[in-house]
Length: 402
Image (cartoon, rainbow, N blue to C red; front, side, top):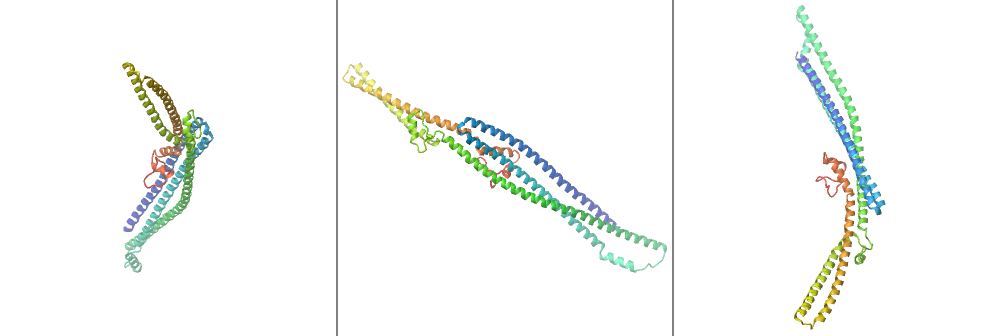
């Protein structure tokens, strides 16, 4: 009866553990399918958004090309390169998604392998325990004594009872052998599953290594394209900043100032000239103010001479008044000339700033930051794992390499 109870309990535990193991494997596979569907849906969403962003960015660049006809060829070439940057970022994201899926598959196969190995170890321990119990010394001694000792009586009842006991012993032995065969059969089944899982795990590891290498190459390509975009954008900015280089203006004085500049009037030189022109303006204004004060003094003396009827210096004061009047006229002309030259420089500075403001939106960092905003809607780690480019406004999590 004890053996029957042990075999019954063992059988129940074995079946329960088998069902639990199968449920775990089914759960792993369900999680894998759900993960694949979720990642694919996210990839489709990103594809739609990225295509929309690319079309919008391309339209903005097309408008900019119409605005600055002088740089049509350069801007168009840059627009193609910027689109290449967007496509490379998308390709980099796709390769990261494939890498992430491969890594999840590989981890799931690892977990399945561990579950199967754990179950096989449990079955080995269970079989060893059953064998140990069936081969205990007391049982062997009792069986030997029974086998060697003949029945002391030939009573029919005793013989029937002995026959029934012998039948129960044989039945228990058969049940014991059946349980061992079941364990062995289940082990063989699990072992076959384990071999299949190992093959899948090896294939997943190879796919993971391949996807990692591909993603690494894509990121390197992305950095190359990004650097090229930055260089091209710097060229565009330089073209804008040098827009008025070595060009005359409607102000002769401004043209003279510009001609003295080492680079013929770049954006930075124009800004420096505007600062210097302020000193000329202040000096011209001070000169005019001083002449007006002198004129007021002369007028006051002439009025006093008329009031006092003292005309001894009247002719001298009138001559000086005419001289100062002519000086004021000349000073105002110089002042107007300085103001006009400064205004010309300010107009050029404003126009260059407006042009720079237009191309600033096309800086590759803006494209990268827009891409970051898209990918970081759910988790910043997606961008830093898939792309990892840093800009002035994107420095990345502390300790993470770009």
